[in-house]
Length: 285
Image 1 (cartoon, rainbow, N blue to C red):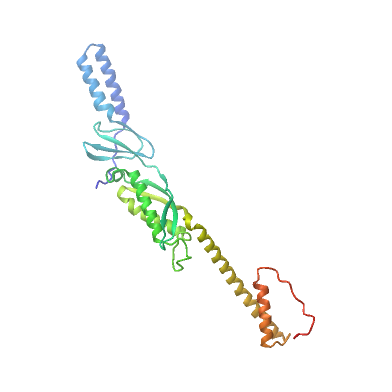
Image 2 (cartoon, one colour; image 1 turned 180 degrees about the horizontal axis):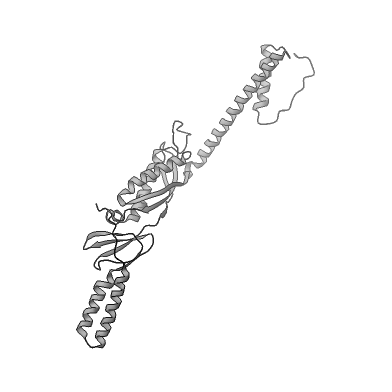
């Protein structure tokens, strides 16, 4: 496997000056009717000088190969002259955005979900990007999709069906992004590509189960809220009975205590306002 070799090419301005000078000399030879010399100068100029001139823009590079052999990579921006017989391939060093398409996969407990990711990547090793894979753009797309699918298969959507799960796709956004970025770096290292950032951009249940799962989530939320209300109501009833006993406000038998507890729980746990009934008789009638 080829490893990146950064080379420093000589400035192209001297070669450009030489090319212009040779061109002027060729014109002078043709004017002076020294045809053979003029033809030789033109051939030298357009075969050995001009083809070696190369411009490298900022955040770009040129990968050079000579007769099938990797020569090196120019990463510095500027105007250079290289061997005119080298093949020069431009490789961008800028950051790329990959907005992945929505994938329909199953999570770790088998629920069909829709998931997509946004990935920011950059070429770090130009030799690997050019020579180790057929098409590095296609390679990134395919490996990114495979990594997102593997991630979705590894964790549940949430804790509804797997309460023991430490990481969920919905609740562990930072951990999921870290794991996705790590896996992508491992997969794309062969192509000399570094992942700068990877995040889940879309996450939802598949349409065929979305409504049922929404109802389930709502039911779970209602149960949790009711549990909290009941715990609070029991505490308030307990506090009321203890305060009444401490201050000797009234002496109630077990039956009356049970009735009082029942009434207080109805008032505290009910989801609607309670209409009080005033007893104008005695305590026991």
